[in-house]
Image 1: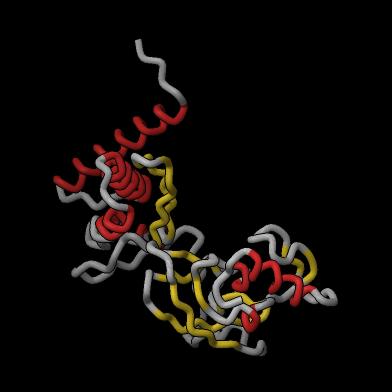
Image 2: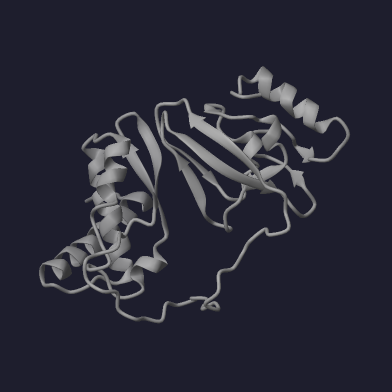
Length: 232
């Protein structure tokens, strides 16, 4: 008799759905959303158990499926996939962004659940906000993801850029998106001011209050220097 934990039960469900996806692929059947998610997840989990390097798994996962392999609209539904993987050194989260690439066949028209159909003209975001452009380099040994809502001043200490210029700013990207910084690669990033009440709590703990409070910028910079944040 096997006593399975909830995590182990989930793993069996993922495997079963992934096997269904593999059978459908062999038969030339395009995958549905659950089948595509299960297939990607299972392949990544197995690769982690085989002790493949993190970066190699991420690159492998980005080549597993294309729009030729899935039903119309599925690729647009899977813009981001987080997978908790068990590596030899412990558990890590694998983040896959837009893992289903454009295939060779023309895309079929489909109505995507929750899809927003906008006018044909370009939509300009943050048009009235001042913009700061900074060069950023990742001095670490692995990719760093920064999401659109993050106070850029408080991002990973291995990122080297002008922290003072980034105070109170966020990435000039739509909500839910972000930027990946590969090791040793310089990227030019556009930042715009954080709007609303401009109160930051949590993050790296460098502010923990109103961005515009008297002396807060200087205090945050001093904390960043004390904690070895590059560019502070």
